[in-house]
Image (cartoon, rainbow, N blue to C red):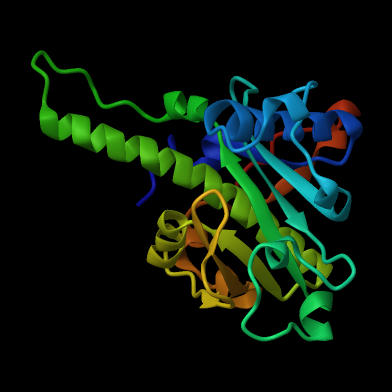
Length: 243
């Protein structure tokens, strides 16, 4: 059972970046992770500390913030196909060409990122007089779970968006560790091409939105969906409470 105090819905909230200011926040989160923390992208290409590429004009952007401090902690984007292509197809050749219907009813989930700073919002184990190695291991697991929780919150927002837009399938290009975490959570993934080299080994998969919605993960938490950032700018935002 998820502790209400430490549930995602109680601690975090997800927004759709639907204004220029909110997109800057989203791009800066990506800059912090992909340029500062991981070194995947060249900082000199983004002097304004906003990491973006040509696919962003075909994408919707989501981000997570901590409810009580207002700190932005994670982001992802959902990319619509452009000229019968998805971003993953620039890196991996699909086993079979995608049909027109695959492009019409699908999006690609990409640029998933969670700041290292998000770790300090993980619930801490009560301090003890003597160090307890078992507790230290438990706390490290809690840190990993916190990052996963933020990731699931972003995924849930993408699921809600998909349902609203009539999207039936996702494509994702992920490292083995993330693929393992998604599979372990019970999400069914269909590999669509051989692994390719892109900042390490990456493998493309397809997921069905209907199957994602059936996952028990959503039964106890991740119930609040997402809001538009413009609601904050217009002063119309109010924290949604559980029914």
